[in-house]
Length: 559
Image (tube, rainbow, N blue to C red; front, side, top):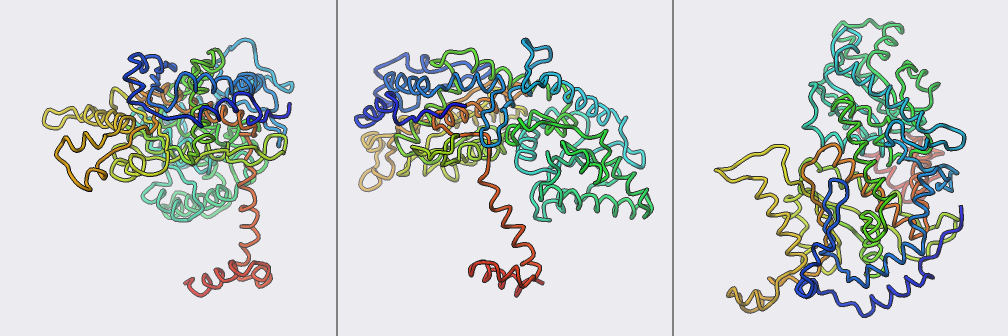
């Protein structure tokens, strides 16, 4: 892989710096002077309608940003990713999450490192669908012959955040009476609360761990296995023999992993293991076998529609010129705010309760990908990288943190997401509640863009010090994303949109967006500290004074 381009040494970066130095945002004036601004800066992306017009850009700024994308090789690097080049330089791996959603029979076939990637992907997808159909139809039964009613996914990071987000978003499509639950935290409260009230005879566990060594996942898997054995034994469903326990695990546990030996040692039949590949990063894996819980709870066809939505955006990025390429443009806008205006965070505000976990999902996608201080060749970055992504569904956020976005001193770009048609149309005294909800969606972006002047406040009768308090500066940048409804395809499009926004930024900054070494040190130290918590004097002595003092507090207060 070639050395990354230093963006700060490009002609486009110099041009953007000059533009920023004389930049005076004026959304009111720009809209007044250019009646076609909204139409010109609103673009289609598959089923999504994306309005970029309330961003702090002029045609001149957009042109310079597009030149930055050209001069840093965004389009070329995207093509390299699609073809299987080893973009993950620190682990010498291809980056092929886009291959997970290529349709069957796609041409030309994708062969990478001598492996038929398309055949591998379709084989796992077919096996996943067949197993999901067995569970949904009642062909797969628990050890006592009862149908599965609850699926518990045990994973962490990408093996949890993606499935739980998609399940919450598409829950209206769950039609088989099978409920999905998700356990990730090693805090025993998580597993205890998720299994409370479940019937071991009708519960299926999915253990999702590529290497089958993840500390949190394997700990929770063992706890779940103990819960299963104890519950079945208490009900008289199994005896205390090893054979009965092994049989119970075989009927109530499956895995998503590549470590067949470790899975078998746990007691799971290797025939019930669904694999994926080292070219799938965890935060890009929801459209792999990691989505098994979704195929079961929602139906395999819904899962395939989700994949089709991903692929539609992949094709948009691959085939659309940069000037109308929505993910690229949104990534460039993020670079503009981050590197030229010092914006340190980015709000994602879905006006859809079903997307309540979408901001949390994006936190891993964006911050684990682009939270880097070295470039893909190991050299230091030359500019700031990454943003803090955060958010809550509207209108909850309006009553919590919107004050800071509207009138605070920090620039916080925000993406607003909404849907024309609700999953649950309800009225209140004849009032369409969803229409009221969308009125808030539209009002907030308008208020952030155009604000309220002191003269307008005074014209309403306000005087004195209250005038300043009720004045809104405006010129707060937002992107509005609208779609007809939150369907599986639309959700796939939304996820892929942010994947490729993240890719665009990472390419411009010259970083490897596909490794995550930053999570390793804390995990290593945890294993060193664990004996100290258990009272090992040598392990305690090896700690720093602060950690020792905290261990003493723990020992003194643990009951």
